[in-house]
Length: 189
Length: 189
Image (tube, rainbow over all chains, first blue to last red; front, side, top):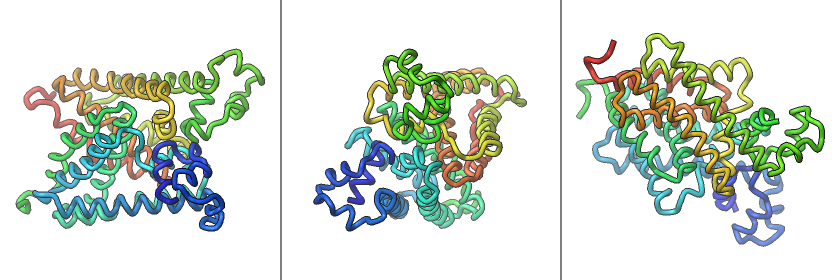
């Protein structure tokens, strides 16, 4: 049900997602919602967003483990490419659930806003750590991680709305060399 | 009513915005909705998004007319600064209505998706034109305009969710020098 909720949130936002629909998509028995999520929709949405935040954080480490060369630009391009593949194979139906939720509940539910904010923090942290392991200076790793998250999230929205991966391609192509230049000279491999 | 709708969409998305609430916020007489917007909610939402797309496009030209030096980095930093000021003076309640709408109706209403996409196109075009007037090569002006839009939109979402302008500051600070470097050497003033 958590997975079904995440899938619906990234397609239609939180307000557009009905509890009945989640149960239906999850193919769960009626009434199971009440017993698993006594806190109702807010609890289920929170768990879905926490789960998706964890997936995003895990993806950073997976991309970092597989890129060659191991540079900030390759890390960003590899992360962008996961979304590119997702759109090209599954269509442009769903965006990022954190953005989907931010759009409609960031101002109406303080508890959900905190969950979304924690989700972004938990995604930014491994990005920073991987950047530092690539010899990006610590302070700069924070601002660059925010640039990476911002550009990726914005490009996901643009690509989704345009039904074209062009915006994702544009940020990967333009920002990869810029990010690589953040490794102080003389320490690059 | 168009303005009230835009304000509500950028706060709560399309699904979270009720027609009655729009009429209430606009302080309009009951029943006026039906006569001005016979197409119902979709028509009103479309008009609100078109209006906001026009505002965004107009802002690009206004920023371009006032920056000194007239460089791509100053254009971007000036645009980011409008959002920075908005958050600092009016709070973090509302984001970009195009993103707010994209999150919940991009996959459920093809006509609204087209309106949102047109909104982004109408914002990207003046960005490209201003970049070209700054001697950024034509082809690159398109990819850089997408980078600017993506980074700005993503940073708006992050700033709003974190109730902090730090992400906006990060993209302005990091990307301004990168954007300035897009002017071919020897043609800079």
